[in-house]
Image (cartoon, helix red, strand yellow):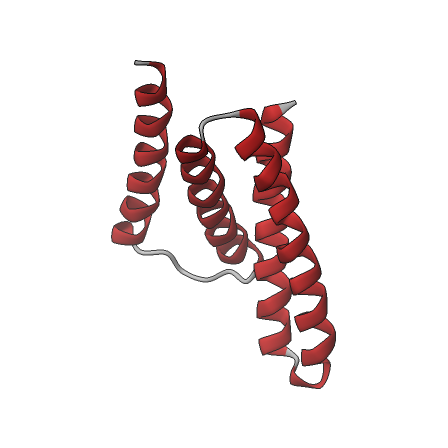
Length: 108
C-alpha cells in the first residue's frame, strides 16, 4: 500500500503544478485553476502523512518530495512541450540518485 501512496502523492503534486501553469496561461480562469491546484496540492499532503506513518520520516520526505518534484517537472515538460536541457536532465537524475541513496541508506 505504501507504494500506492507514493505514486498518488507524486501524481497529485504533478496535477497541482499543471493546474497552476494552466492558471498562468489562461488569466481569465486564474482563480479556478488556483483553487483546483490548491485542492490537489493541499490534499496530497494527506498521502505524505500516511508515508510518515508507514516509514522513516527522512525516507518519506526524500521519496515523496523528491519524486513529486521530478514527476511535476516531467509532466510540465511533456504536456506543455517545454524543452529540457541536458543539464536539467542531469539535475533530475541527481534527484533520483539522491532518492535511491536515501532508500538504500535506510536498509543499512
